[in-house]
Length: 171
Image (cartoon, helix red, strand yellow):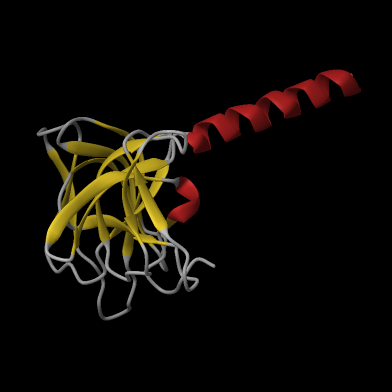
């Protein structure tokens, strides 16, 4: 009986781990003043429309679990109140992530593919506190777009270099 219980516990922990591997924590730009529409399916029926709660500083984040070319699917949640809605959210410039290369001299690499062994497409030498637009997700990796010295740079950002916290750094 104890072995069965241990086996069930092991399986449950592996299933949870595998599920969490495929999610990406993303931010809704804390300065974004527009509506975020939640759909029942891509370009489908509107379930809800929400906005940032600036009065309470209760900002939105998105736990994205899947995507299409134009939409992320997941849970949109207020950071403080915990109110949430689940559905499809149209991709846009207001969905992003912060980088975690806080330490002096720590570079930030963007990759051609979602793995560290792939070619580096761009390296940022100094911390940049701007929100990086997220256009795609893949097993915890996010494909970002950022303007750097007047040029748009793109690539995959590793999970350990992402910060989805609107209130403080992630160190």
